[in-house]
Length: 174
Image (cartoon, rainbow, N blue to C red):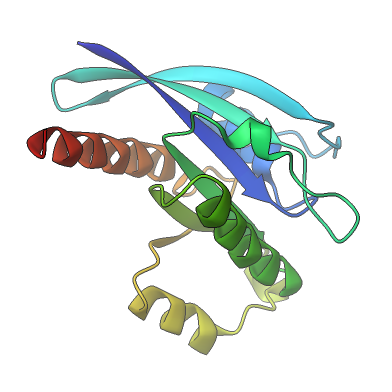
């Protein structure tokens, strides 16, 4: 059985959302930074157990104090990847703020917090104690690198599994 799932990529500007999607869909990394304006949609099929899942990847423009994501882009999402840049502490706060906004606008959805740019580990600013406390609070966190491909496939696949689990749990209650 083939299923379609919409995933939104959320985070501040220049955290690597587009690069993660390119790495996942095309196994490609480009050093050039191009700002996403609005939304860019890609898709890739993954296999979860006996199911084919077509992931519709909505790469949304970054959010900052002056740019808020359009909540209409979130409609119909089955899950999302929150992306923070490990070299910029403030992007973790931005990501957590986006999670709160998603929950207030569309409800609780499966998500994973990606701490991106692990290839720049010597430049990381993230407070390890805070990251650990977020993990203990139940937030699924993965460290990724769009440049090297570290954990990119795993992140998308893990989210696909979690989205299917939520769907199946919902069916059990019908």
